Image (cartoon, rainbow, N blue to C red; front, side, top):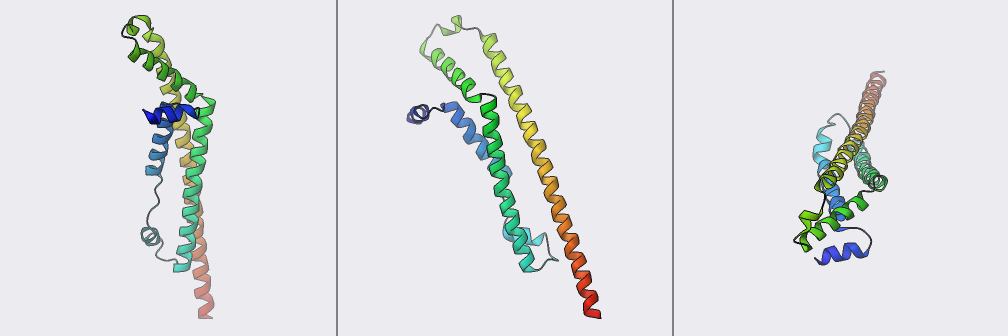
Length: 164
């Protein structure tokens, strides 16, 4: 109850705060970095120094990706006015719990339509974010593949020079 009071004082509703918290927890679960050992096992032909540089780059990319997705989520919440809608839902729930005759006064079709629209927008936004993340992942895969080829080319040239 006190958490609800604190979130209202700073201008963000309890449900909106819970949505943001849930999103961040879900994002964290999806983009958890792997251990350095696991990462290095993926690049056995690279030197330890190269593996460390790649791992630092990987960590930077994951951190950046986290921040970019969170920022994009914030922008989408602002554009779609999720906070306002959740505040309305919160008020409706509050009215319903305070007034035992409330079910007879409200138009549940309107509420259902609003909630349906919210869910459709949420699905569309999540699909857009997923496509964007998949594109970013593809770019990262391409970069890693390019680095692998460059290392192989460099190793081949180094071997040729050593034979001379």
